Image (cartoon, rainbow, N blue to C red; front, side):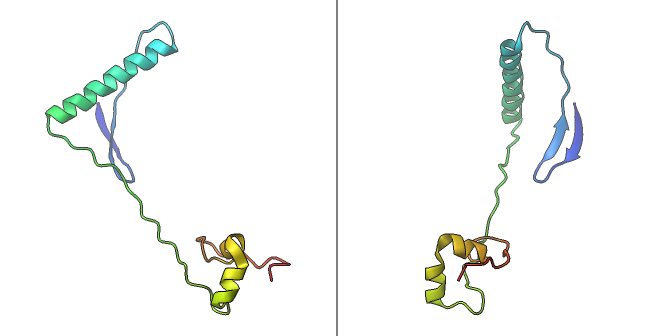
Length: 97
């Protein structure tokens, strides 16, 4: 077992082990047992696991040139193409009004 890498929001530990089992079902069962033992040992040692979170900020401000009525008329798909709901503004498509 070795400290192997820094993840985006983790410290990665490399564990290499071999299982001698008869089939994939037995391998999955034994692997689960082993991983749960690692988890139980960590709990006994007072190690806590943080679960990564992400925050997404959505800009709902209409681009300049579009009024409130234009925004409502555009509908959700038109609004997404104009960058009102999405994160990337797509080029204007013919027939978009």
